Image (cartoon, rainbow, N blue to C red):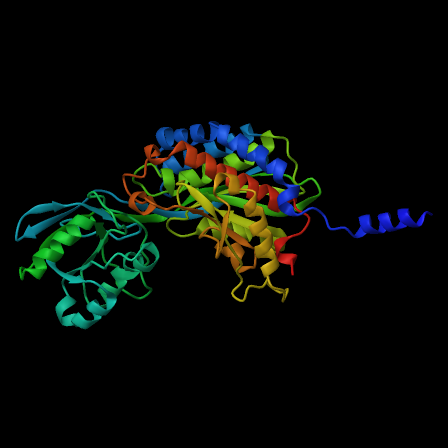
Length: 467
């Protein structure tokens, strides 16, 4: 053989494959173009919001949404569609009100917290004590708290640092003898919009009624108290907890062409609270992830691995849908190569948070790191495919409530990152409605989800095997 030909063949054999950005540039642009021209995803979200409405667990609306979603997946040509049975909490709000009795009489803008117990039929009338922190509450002691309604009025420091007052405040107040708990709504901006959301009663502690009041009314009560006048409130809540109800996760997929047992899963939660329409939280998440997969299918793309979309149920109050899905996949969790969650609204997307789980970042029983710097670098390469639409930023730390059981077992997790300009103002309120969805922002979310999920499912390596 000619020596020159031999050298050429040797170089061709060892030459590196094209980088991911180059390799998937054309396909990614097709997906982006399709997403930016798509109107079907918005139409589906509009139907969910306007024709079905909010979807609290145990409700007829949630079951209607589940049935409709499975039919839409079938219409879109997805495979292996199933509605996985899940038991979920069945809490009913009933009528509720709060009235400021002194020094003036005024109806307070309030909303009972999810899973709260109700008041006696006649309601609860009591003086109010105000705590800006748990330390404030502890300093008051039982002598000042027993028999009172505690209002937590913390400084807003963002959802993560502040939401603990909503989730655990009732039990901390009950430990000191409080008869009820009110909390400043979890938002930095309010137009008399109270925010619901779940609470968690501590085991062994008396369950007391708990509700959120608007930012404005919390501030009013605080001002009156600072002026030296005792505030008195009447609280009435008919809330009741019924036996767990039947619900379902909704699952559909594009079967992988070469490695069908390996899975990229993406989705959001189909349930919402019983207020508003659940548009941003999380109708936008389930419809954007679904539409991303539907566009991949429509374009006739056949990734090496399976792409699976899941609408998890009961994220808002128990996480039972996420737990049930983890139980369903069992030992096959090792074949989940990535999990993507969208549960932060459909505002302008920025990219993804990306990280690993498993406590020490290891797959159960494997002893191997779930992700590495090489994996992060690879995801950053994928992000470059989205630079043209300004949503390719990759930051450390990804995941979400519904994929947390997978991340715990080492599955690399992704969380959609958006501008988040108004999400905390809308979610868990009557204002979480379809009109808040900006069509172009929704399309951009679909685009980045389609590109990320497709490339992860088709590229040669798995992230968790990159060193």
